[in-house]
Image (cartoon, rainbow, N blue to C red; front, side):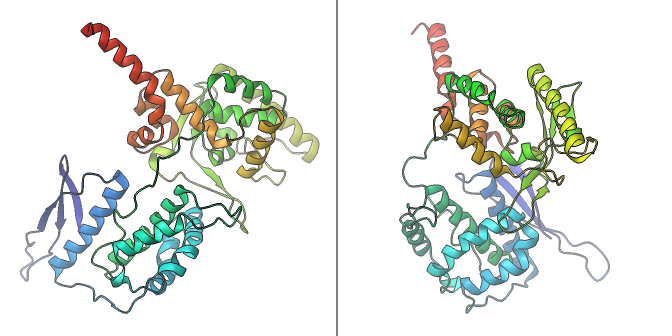
Length: 391
């Protein structure tokens, strides 16, 4: 098994063990230094390095896997879905990839893996930009096209790992078209109107939406909270699971995708007081309706069956609240997460802290998503510099 070690700013050492000689002495390991393309994201860089490690290990062992030149993308994808993806991907990602594959295979499935070219893949992405959605007939969004690229990259990376390809032809093919749209956020005035609207709702919805706005949690993360996750003394909440509901399947919870997603968020005294009131309300409801006692392992947002509530329930309710109160219709529950981050940044909170609170694995992810929110901070910094330099 090859190992990868970081050596410098953009330098990595791939090391492959060569085992022992006939006398039992360890043979000197084979080594190779590689330099990833500088414009790759952290995730892309990791994939690139893994591919290079696989190729170098085959080279060292003089045991390259024979390439099946007759294998088509459709045939390999069937194998990938059956034998590789279920163990490699989360259930939600697997389901989403299956949807993407329904668009990929009609256009590219007949190609042999070894005949796929960057030009062919690039033309496919361009064609998909005018492909209608199944829901409203509108062209696919750029985000959907990017999702198709990610799925195709995953499949072809599997083909590289198994020796059907020597390189991934989809690498660095996708380029976003047009200007990336800024994610909708609520300004301070809209936030105040929203809070006033939430206070006219039942306590369940008031608590849920205020909690997402105050902490920046994702929809599923808030649905997955248990009472035992709250540390009342230190006013923190341990985010350690998320709720997923796939079409045709039972609701389930899963751990965060990355280690940084397992985190603690902090709540104000006011939010803590509201949560305690909600806990009392839940205890009363359970006793009256079910004759049961609330436990620490119960979900904050619980169905009568004991399962957590489905995230889409809150999605539909939020849209109704916006419409009834004349609030911007382009906002969503996820917009509350973006609003939380934007308000933190506007208050001068550093990007690493914001990334930690949101559960981003890299501060660069936070910078990419919320670059526009730093405009105020940039302006203030420039004004301070101007005073120092007297310009």
